[in-house]
Every structure is written in structure tokens, then in C-alpha cells.
Length: 70
Image (cartoon, rainbow, N blue to C red; front, side):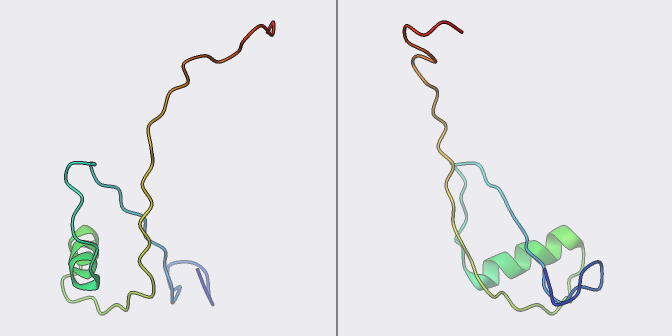
């Protein structure tokens, strides 16, 4: 993210996905623990700046076209 780029960047954006049936609590403590486990860095010091929750809906159209030749 910034202000520098690459492995030594001071800020990172991390995107996690969960099964709709097993969405965990999105607390700073829980997410920090998950990030440490994923990165295999148990003593990593980190500050979570923002937590955003975005639910993707799985929707399929009933019709893709109607009376318009493709």
C-alpha cells in the first residue's frame, strides 16, 4: 500500500474469504491472530487500520437475453 511499495512496505491490504456458513467474528484481535497464523509469524506486531465486511451474493440470471439475437 504505502508510503513505500514492496516487501518492506509499511502498510498492507489483506483480503480473507470465508465460507458463508463459517464467518468468524471480525474483531481486531481475531483478525490479528488469523493474520499471524497465515504468515507463520506468531510474534508479528501489527496495527489493523480498518476492517471492512463485503458479502458476495451468488446470483444467476434467469434469462441472459430476451428477443435480441446474439
